[in-house]
Length: 89
Length: 303
Image 1 (spheres, each protein chain N blue to C red):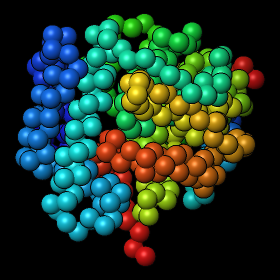
Image 2: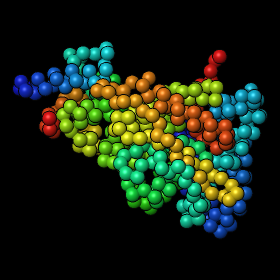
Image 3: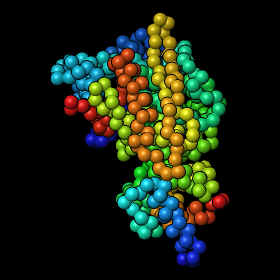
Image 4: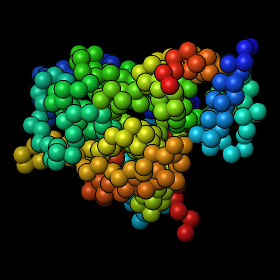
């Protein structure tokens, strides 16, 4: 993994912890290949919307870009790759 | 029948619905209503699961009868009769014999832009969806459990209309990502505000001396997308017989911060909505069609 990807993932993890108010987690607790929902990081349906809003506000990705693309939310790595490829800011 | 199968999965089959549609067409509303009374008597007498699912609401609404199984069953029977009447009204609309519709305070629903329309399983609630399909120029998205989409199609004839889109609440986001995107595009999203889908985030608000768990999603979606959340209740009125669709003022929502919205921040909005539901239950106690039970929706205050 190159340095840009690594740095971006680190930043995104910190943003997720901060935005989702994951009080008992730090960026280091989020594993790249861990599922985001249910048995993984334990996020719920409202968190899914919060992530979409975070993507919109911080990375300039319209909500319609992620609509019906469940695969993006499979793991942290899939989410990070999608944001990195589609960010406009 | 599977233990967790929703009640409507095994009640109201295609044959029965078709039968009543033919009856409505040939015999008229009065005859269909009379025949439905026989069916309702059967369900009131033998459908223990439906009774159990309704019992908690009836106990809250009729506390003086809460300890008497016989009195609760009489209330249950009346509720089933009203349910059948409301279904017949919606079937009747489906065969082009709609009742006059009177809209009250439509001004609360903006003509353009995104809006969350919050409905409840109360009275002839299906009629409000039909009306919005005819009167609104924007696309209408309805959130519904995947296992109930067929049921919605049966009752609402959605396949015959083009302005509707059903968003399944199945999956990791419960359809909320799709609903949020629809609001961003300036579309309307219809959410049932009185009954959470299994696994949905809920908040409890005071209701008829007990507590009612309602979904957070309507208020969260509206707050996050900076669009109004408009409660809508539909009632069948007599003299003259008509359907009254009443729009309520937008429910005040919290400012959306640069972090996740907490349940406590959305509670005032949910509580305000539950007060509307409480008023409706007092007005028409037999037209509250929540059918709790499997979703664990009511709790009684211990005090």
